[in-house]
Image 1 (cartoon, rainbow, N blue to C red):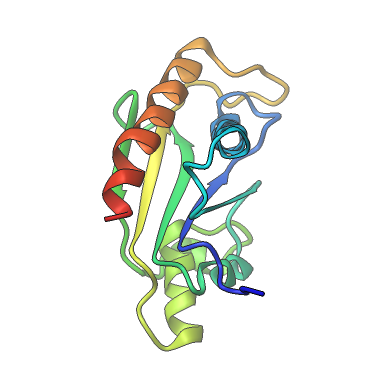
Image 2: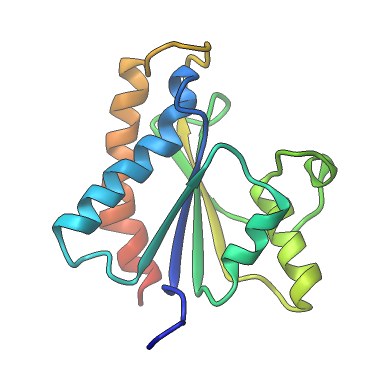
Length: 158
């Protein structure tokens, strides 16, 4: 029995009932469906939640790479992807943390650097409670999905 975690973790987060904030969970659904239909993502673990919390640092253990996926209004469209550093910020003491703060917790509890991590932020427009995802956000989601499959995963697996 192999208890080693999948080497790559894709961690999506957001609130499905808040319009474009559903981009993270929607990405999870797309990737999960792809994973079930093909063998392409056999080295990838998928995880989703409403927000990042201190306990999520444990989910990074044993990984070779981590991709966080979230919605954002301040990024370029259709999405941005950048490398993260372990770093405490104001979110470190709140109930919802940034990916960099989660990496800092990992570093603190494991006494070593976290796995290489990236944040893919998908351009969002509307976060109203009870709203549907906007058409622009849906289009950006599709582009980000293809980026993960065609660019991110092939490059990170080398």
